[in-house]
Image 1: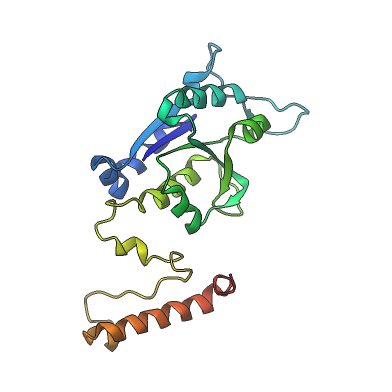
Image 2 (image 1 turned 60 degrees about the vertical axis):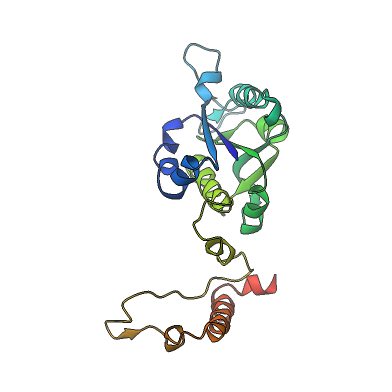
Length: 227
């Protein structure tokens, strides 16, 4: 998978994409990260990517030209001509595990990262293929939600996680929250690991885990069961 990030702050991605699973996925050749600096696609000598809003009001608005030029530059490569351009936006569809699974099947993705007060509406209407939100709150930048979505998508690519079951059994993959997990020591400060997990009876353990996952979901996220 090739992931292209369009941003006014390219250094934002250096550490997160250079650590842990994202680093391993890149080293294995399972994903390529391409970071594009919006300022490289401006035409004025000051390399401005924002301006004052028409109609007045607080804050600065990101200009449309750099976004269009950058995406057109990316899509100029024949294999990327139809790549989806995802705009991170609080007005977008709520990102979910189902959406992560769908995006993980794409050969390439473009993430458009906003900043400041907002982005010119023409980017929303004419350039973005879709808009996605990670929750009902506002962040200072679109780079953070882009990273969240990238992590959720890349970990689903075959070969990224050492054990495929690590992704298959995750919360939300089955429609439920995950069951409780335990490791050594067997007893810690008087709290013991449930006996069933020490029994070695895999069929009974599977039943216990399913019951625990359903109970936890019913208690904490009953909306998932209703869905």
